[in-house]
Amino acid sequence: MAGRGHLYVIAAPSGAGKTSLLRALLERRPAVAFSVSCTTRAPRPHEQDGRDYHFIDRAEFERLIKADEFIEHADVFGNLYGTRKTTVDSALAEERELILEIDWQGASQVRKRLPEAIQIFILPPSRAELEARLRKRATDSPEAIARRLAESVSEMSHWREFDFVVVNGDFDQALAELEAIFDGRGATSRQDRPGLVELVNQLLKSTA
Image (cartoon, rainbow, N blue to C red; front, side, top):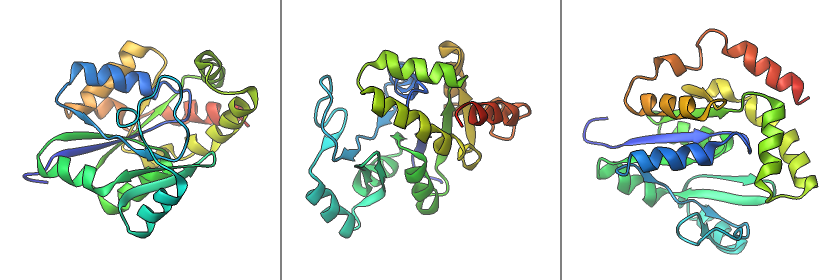
């Protein structure tokens, strides 16, 4: 869209390495803005309000929903997450590049409101690696990890809804693929590329 910025929607199952990839991408591209979402979940020890998330209570979040203040919102593992409309509108009006790090539910809502948004899904290379990354993170209980692994089946099944799919096996290669997408050279990461269906089928089978 002429005279507008670009919105990049990036989703992945927990443990796919999305956050690490985005952190590295933003270090290389300081002009790219990262949308800070609202959430009702409690902050983790290293997180700061306004930097990682806007931490608000459920009553305030539900008030914002009723006021149609979110471009997308979702219930993830019992916690509410959402992106304020004003955050997106301001960035696009100022012709900036903005990243939304959200789940597939939120991505679907953005797709309906802003079909021009560029949507990227990040996959792990295997179920074993996905589980290993979740355990290494050491922020969730064994029960929470088991729940996230089970939920990853549903999350990964939505991969076809995205424009691009990046498999985060080799970190540097995955980062290079992300940069290529931002540069308009992401043809090799299209979701309809040969061989991707076989990989996803294996991921879904192994997590069943």
